Length: 121
Image 1 (cartoon, helix red, strand yellow):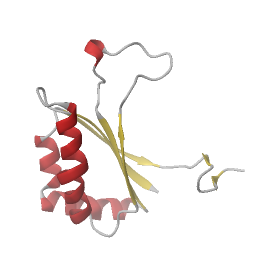
Image 2 (cartoon, helix red, strand yellow):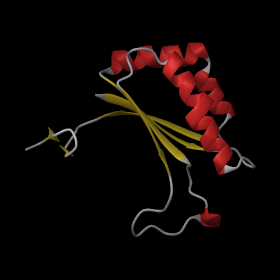
Image 3 (cartoon, helix red, strand yellow):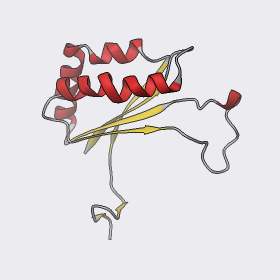
């Protein structure tokens, strides 16, 4: 399994509620329409608090507002999905709606997953 992990911060001056509404509304609709059938899973995690033993955030603001994860079966499916997102323009919309965007590509190795029953035994 290959996944895209993208950490994003909203633009200066944009309220968090406005950013979340755009992310969960028009952004999600575009990703689903343009990403194609290769997508296996799409999740968003909105940051709500620092982790255990982490220092408080500067000015009470997290360094990122959302972590987006998009799962596909392999690198070929990843490339095809992102071709669709680029050609449909969604990647450029994200750039316009974020101040910081840190995209990563990862290979997932499930160690433990109580919900699906997957993982090492």
